[in-house]
Length: 161
Image (tube, rainbow, N blue to C red; front, side):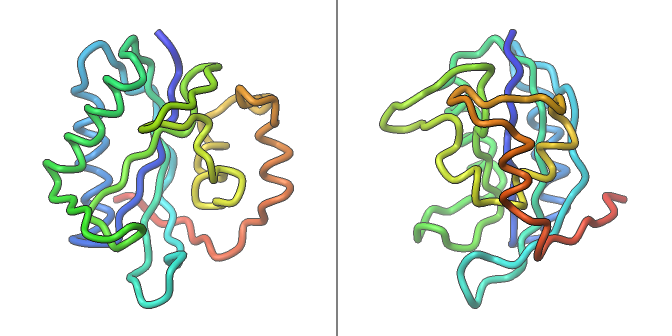
């Protein structure tokens, strides 16, 4: 079993409900236990003209291989109506593998740690709710250093009902 952190985001079709449904689906994955879920946060889209996003991070303990987990996450996205019409377009659900144990993964379909993790307050702050304070990414960067370089700006913690 390895600890895996999944970034979750949605800005279409009742985003908070999309995340709640995703959490339920993550808890049903084979060889996997849902270990925790952060608070939900709202943030502006990185691209102008899109609805605001709702984001969170889930912690999983899993014995699935990285590509097996990626395939399972994409199946959850598809089940929840994800359409890949444009890169970085609005979406019902986006599930990203942020960290996979202490692995560095550089494959055509999967890069871990997530390649833009250091720029994403909407990922780092929810991750910090779940991860140990002294967490180091597989590439040696510390979560505390990443947080210090990425201010809590544009984020709004929201109730999860």
